Length: 380
Image 1 (tube, helix red, strand yellow):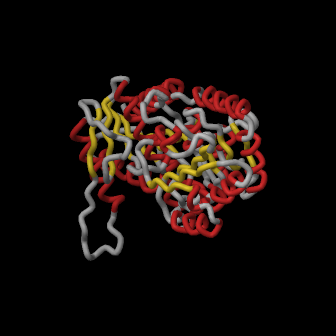
Image 2 (tube, helix red, strand yellow; image 1 turned 180 degrees about the vertical axis):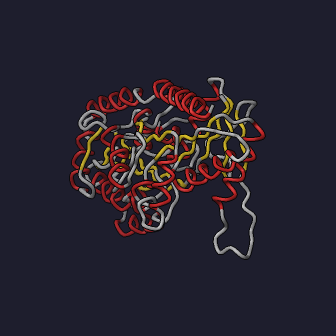
Image 3 (tube, rainbow, N blue to C red; image 1 turned 90 degrees about the vertical axis):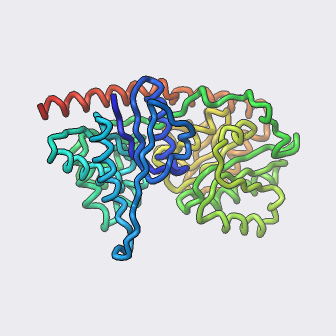
């Protein structure tokens, strides 16, 4: 099948999942066309089955904000016509579902009919999409999609609560590819980041307010008061500078390493002992899943879809949002005993295997086939 995928090309979870999905589909024989404003960060190699089409937005002084939605719709129309695309899969409702629908309507004028699948990832529903300025357009776009999926049961319920959705929402979880996570690299050595007697705690995110970055620092501060430890902070974002200042105020600057964005998350996680995810909201918690496949237990908040991934007392522990003291207590339960730590590491890995792409891919392929047949039968 020839499939066009629209996503954000950044380090965010929706872009990562969309890119990994496209790569896996190409490996199974499908022809994949990524349509976005920059080559996705996880898309390292193009091939005869993987193509990238850049959306250019001309700069016109007339516009205070350049109309990306219009440029994306036009690029989709051209790409679908030129390459005979059979199905459109858009990730993140804003503005991709809206642009995708406009492309569908333009194509229908030329007698071209194509089904569109919209995957909801999180803040496109719970934050941006629920804003009064955008809500009518998001609601319309969801209902005009041929198929709608969400990455967790929690996000599905929030979508039904926030919007007047007439469509059935299929839950297909985020995933990881276990073959891409190996402990065999020669540089996976703890000495790169810490002394042998230090535990390594990690956080990976886009450093937005929703991630509760100060809580990450405070939880680690509580941990390092009880045992020798280092904190590895991976990512960039508006909260990074404040986090650096907080470390300085707490006197722990020498124990915290800020790495910035990285394409080598597995190389960071391979020597981590614990992952912190105290977010105010997470539709799924992909970062937690990536930690778990690398045998890193997770201390997290109990919000959103995280409890569907991080199993309390098995792969890590869940705490109420902002309950730093409880997170510290739970972290020390794991880190203070090497035997307990080893058990949690293995549990985390085993649970993560349930989300391997080989288990999730057939769900998407079945949905594609269903959407294509239903659209074809209704059209012809």
